[in-house]
Image (tube, rainbow, N blue to C red):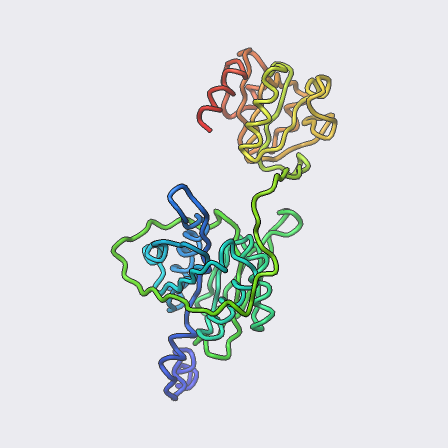
Length: 358
């Protein structure tokens, strides 16, 4: 290895780069989001997870972590961002940014990115990652990988590999984004939107020190064309039970009087409703929701069987389920042979107790 090659790897080209350029182009940014809580605005769990991952990437790549938080009446959230790992926090607090109005938020972030030229930016999946990040990538000439499930740096090549699901999670594909060794001023910004709960949540360190920089932006020239006027009633679309990650299954011994409570539990869990042939006969489900040899095989993370006796024909459809919990009043019910957790009890009584927990 000759000296020139070694110097290139170390980022030493023989020319002194301006300090401002180095500091402003080596950073990994996290675009945080806040949600309204009982005591005011609170950081979302995904924001904390992104800061934890950014901290790991920064340690591996020799970078700094900057966080940007946009909204209105954000209170002391800047200190929370520092405690979770940010070296510098840019806080944009203005009435025009309430609800992350698209045009004002895009203007603020574009101005920040053009000024500081970050190397990498992590966005939470959702409004920021799905609506604002693509527009930023197009405006700034950067790259964007969406709905990421993993981010891994290659220390030899200083490349970042992002994994994301394709074909409804049938398999995962990796995409490698190459970063220049020095994150130089000509390096295109690399953006990633990340799904919740794929990275661990760091414990806040209240003794960390960091800088908070208020963002002063004139938003009078970019009024929001789309405004949030309030919540609307939304009914979550149903998934085919073969794709569901949580399933609440209904059986004959659930009883008509407990049907509403079972559906409410499924809604709270974000689960799909399914069942056996007896549930079809009772009119609780249709044929597309039947589990078993005469229906569909399922592979959920959780299969909660309520009043399902569990015939051999039904239990065949559960073989790929990761965890099966069953509630049935008969200790000899065949469902218990397929269950990881079995409870001999009346389903209605269990539902009443679960309602108190939720």
